[in-house]
Image (cartoon, helix red, strand yellow):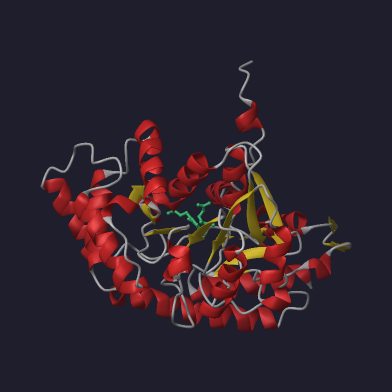
Length: 394
Ligand code: PMP
Ligand code: GLU
């Protein structure tokens, strides 16, 4: 039998992708599954972006691109950072990658040495911890509380820092909690980091536009943080372009150069047609995709009001992204339809089996008391899913 590497054997399978695959499989078997597991907009990519891609095919964009992205795309990203975030990056600070996921993998690969610690406020996005471990870093999970909207406090950060701390990674709006850090909250975190000048911040802002409170805040906006923050972003979420696989960073020059070198050996750069389409996407005003955000907002109200009526589901009010992350520990120790529920994974599997609704266990996000429900689904699907869940748990 082939002996696989310890690296891959020690790696967890992406729980979000695994649950989506399982739901797909069950659907193919004829089961009526409602998939609320994957964080993927259920909209089509807007026509103006599709047209740019078709034009690029017809214009014979078929060659390797510069490893770190077309110059025009880097210009569009610089314009976007300036317009939306008031950040002033130079072309040498931008790297385009095959999704924000690869951008994160690059960052870990170029910054981590064995044993370096990365602080991950919990809940964190599912892949952070395995990307860190893959690069021999140590994820340091810091538990946050639902009563504090799952946000890291300055005191918690201070307590988690050790001489081995290399980075802190977080997303705002947060996948999976939907929490959005305010400017004052980011400043308070920055104040702690002032005492620890070698720690790099990785600010994952991929849900930037899916924000229901208005006003996205970037860590790099603070002059004293700009040179030690990597701003990660991408088009998967706001532009409904998950499959196009384009993400990017704005970073200190040395980190950007290293990421460029890394992907020069691993992928040679992101897909050329997708890059051309993203030039168009980013050069347009974000208003062009506001209709999707408006719809996510309506769905958020809907799912929150439906969950409110469900006993045993304690939920914070997500201010962005398209997830709710209810604490369902109320059910631990109980038996539902003959199935013993000991943890969030049992509960999520119970919902798949007995309600035909796919969710994701909170364990994958570093929080064993919760499950993640994506509301990137139609209102009818949301209503039906919560009805089924209610029936299954009652
Ligand atoms: N960061 C977060 C917080 C995410 O939810 C996702 C999900 N796709 C990513 C990064 C990666 O995005 P992509 O690779 O599709 O750009
Ligand atoms: N980010 C999405 C999610 O959390 C897509 C899946 C993935 O990339 O893991 O569900």
